[in-house]
Image (cartoon, rainbow, N blue to C red; front, side):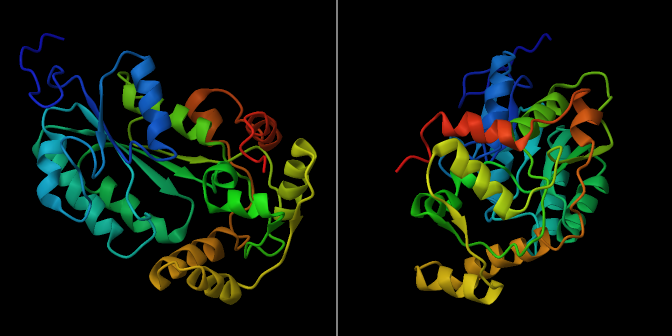
Amino acid sequence: MTNTTTNPTTNTTVNDEILVLGGTGKIGRRVAERLTSHGVPVRIGSRSATPPFDWEDPATWDAALAGVRAAFIVYSPDISVPGAAEAVGAFARRALAHGVRRLVLLSAVMDSALPAESALRDSGADWTIVSCRWFAQNFSEEFVRDLILGGEVTLPTGDQAEPFVDAEDIADVAAAALLDTTGRHSGRRYELSGPRALTLADVTAQIAKATGRELHDVPITPADFRQGMVEAGLPPEFAELVTGIFLETFSGKEAAPTDGVRQALGREPRDFPDYVRRTAATGVWDV
């Protein structure tokens, strides 16, 4: 590469950087770490970054896109919400206007995420879609961790099983797609999951065994779950969003494991018990 122009904000060579939206979040920071380990400069896209990026303020998009060669798209607050498709489509078109054709979208295996995926496909970008099941790390890096520390996991999952996917696998696939120079990941949609479907009872039993703590899954209706979040001080619209995600995720419609990790990387996905052992060793579930 023979670039001679330098980004005045980040002091890196133009067209070397890869933009990672949500780069401080659960998946984005892992993707950023992998890119960095390959010697690729990363530009974090967030409200607190320099330059800042805000999905709700399109005026911030140009500076974030200027001079990057590819982008990892994580829509906030969630790709399933109304307006996500329009925002993803608009961002993709803005990226193309900046000459950024390689776009990798973090999506979810939910019908409500499909419009945003279509918006990226229809944009004319060189795209890859990484569509995921529920993250295993939600049990250690989200509010569910607090439930585990309290000894009772009250989530509106019913008795539905879910093939939880390890965030490390998601980041591996996304980074491979962003670094791809052969085109093998172009125009591909990978559905990522773990190798087995587990119920919440299975999950709590495994975490209890790994930590030596008493832990129970406690059934709760979606209505009571939503009301509990509101009573805990969370905004009603956020409680509605989270409850809706649970209802769609644990509907039983997509409970079978998929081979997306194998398709993308040529290996098997990480197993949930491995995540539990690895995470328990960090002490994150210790009181």
